[in-house]
Length: 224
Image 1 (cartoon, rainbow, N blue to C red):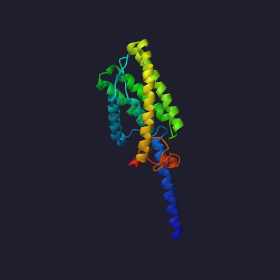
Image 2: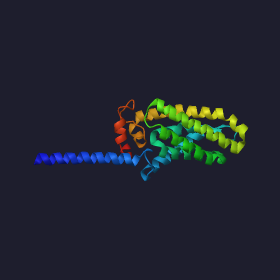
Image 3: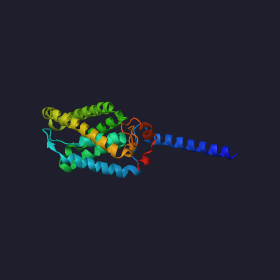
């Protein structure tokens, strides 16, 4: 009788564990972790960091905008936290920089264009595989170049906007390199951080392959 009771208890524990894992996956959903009250401080901090990062380098352009390093943080945030949180950070951070830096006419365009860029990255890059990350990041970068080209036409005309295309391409390329390098460094230094997003990276995994299951089963609250 005692052994049967123990077996039943073990079975109940296994069922509870499976239920918790399923609930964790559902809470993350297809878009990675969704913004919740517990994640607001993280979003606020990362948005502030992205704003500062965007303001560190400002190269004026003919379309009355400026080249910057915002793409690096947009890519990093989407890699680490998925499209929901990445979209908020990627849109708000650079938009706030526009307002603070004296480019208010760009703020709304930046919010939409950069936010969608981050969402594209988060949706297309689901696991830490260099090829997938590069393809998804390039697609998002091309969207950004197109978006700013169209916005530049509205604000400054076709000629000025067309001249800015090479610079925007270079900005996106640099952002991809820095973003991937930064994410690679952070995931090695603190693997639980990426459990908040939708990338298959487990704690202690060197190449992202062996930790796929651990990462998928980890709830957002397990990051601490």
